[in-house]
Length: 367
Ligand SMILES: *Cc1c(COP(=O)(O)O)cnc(C)c1O
Image (cartoon, rainbow, N blue to C red; front, side, top):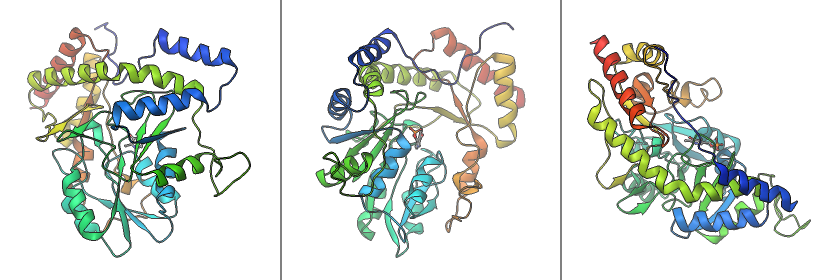
């Protein structure tokens, strides 16, 4: 059939973003400046209830400086999921601390509080859940384990702009939280990240660490990095932030359509009290069928999909020395079974119908 491929993800960059970038370029001031300051304020008001926000050059940089700002370093253990992008564990390892992997809840694909409890040792300093695919992690359960053992909670909210649990936004639970602004995320600044901080001391440390340890020029107080966001990127992010709510509603409507129209696969459940923002719409299929279904969707139905993540972090050659001490069977299983379907806001009704018909056909073909 000669129909165009429906892509798995599609960044939406329009005239307004181009005009905003052009205005910054014409101003001649392109590095971190007034656009970044405005973006931080607007992001804070829109997405984390007014908590302090610091923009950085990427989500990964945000995790790195957030962890450093909270004093994480050699000798510390930070519990993280393995079923996530490698940046989660990488950022812990880059501080000199040890990422300790725990297993996931099979329904939400997010860190399991019971598994976190099993992974705690006397060196554990913190736990960093990921709100994977845009579904909030079990912050009450994880918070209870953290309180019992005196651990800090950090949030990898890279995929979860605007998600919430019992009316509380993600990014407001942890001592710090990070949102990614990479092009395939729910909103973008080109590249970028936003660090939301619960208190001014962490916020100040993040500001220092992103700028060579300086708040005042050439008065370097700590050893820092350069992970500043530019005004060019912030200008894109500000426009995108204004469009996020509409896009999220469209993602949710697309997901609702798929929930109703898919058959023969396991659709993603939403926990009571959770608002899912569907960075990904991730189904489960038989592991033995998964790769056949992915290629049949592409070849026969022109439906692009993603597998996030085919290899759990603890099986990557870069991270395999951090051998999990707890059972990881839900992580292993999910890695073999997941397929993420297009759910992005630019899908037309016809696209959605093609996605559903394609999935139902390839699922039925294997049965
Ligand atoms: C995208 C992502 C990151 C890293 O963000 P970048 O902006 O790409 O550096 C970290 N964690 C998770 C879960 C992500 O999806």
